[in-house]
Length: 433
Ligand SMILES: *Cc1c(COP(=O)(O)O)cnc(C)c1O
Image (cartoon, rainbow, N blue to C red):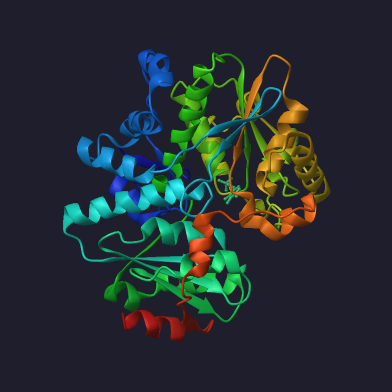
């Protein structure tokens, strides 16, 4: 399969090139040339298949031409070694819990898949070691570090701003050891990102070592997110619910929802999608006005969705032939303030006993307001509420238990390398590796 750039100015890439490069040379996002429609028999049988079996069928449609069947199956089964339950919340609303992976957030799926696919290409080519550089304000670093932990031929350097990530987040990438190195940068997130960008452009460093990113726009992180949309629908089919399925996705950079839209293009019977936003309402505004106007992000309690210029908008725009009318037919939007998010979280907990995290709360609220009586709604619960313990406890005025998996991280010994925000220091460090 070839991958083209949404900017249409760069040469088409192979899967391997697209995965190693991340972004196309013209700064566009890679798109698969063909999105295969899956056979009717698959949609009929889906309800009797496991998560891994379903995911493999979807993975084969994307990657089957480029990865041999046995390896691809192993990558899929290794990636999805945890469950993704669909839990009933109330009325016609279900929560797809994407937080049972190692770092308790949905980004685990993409990060684990990408690490294994990259590992596969490195082993196949007998390539020299690859170094993944990732700047994080918290959650991406933990998903990437844990996803790549122990993968042969890959080293990961996580750069994070000193004192600016929560202790729970910090322990998820500083206690791992092995092929993961955490760099505690004396600066803010933007400094971390600037260091990574400079490294990618530095001739000496690129001559010395093979550098790559594990950005969320990478096709190997983005496409696997389609897997669980199929599994969610399969679980509804099993309950006899087949018609008028609506999926609501709390969205920031819009990678997650775009993977769902790809699923629909492959034939997945979903009638429509809702992109739920916090106060960062660029997409919501686009739906209303037809104008895409990025602006600086504002801070909210659903902070993984604080994005002022969602990169994957380019993919949605391309997928629907740049037509506002076509986009609006399949996706609707909404935007909520912190007060509304908190109110929803508290209310849902009180009335149903179901504990949402601030991101899931945005999705749940959208369904309570926008679902029609004949529809059945699924919202993606993108993170475990314990990841936002302080915020959630303040809202529900109750204690949030930390799952054993998170406690394990917190018991580990913090190992990190102190780093200045000066590029020369970072460069010297990498050259010594
Ligand atoms: C990353 C993230 C999101 C946003 O997902 P996008 O793919 O960027 O739209 C939502 N919730 C949580 C918890 C996240 O970590």
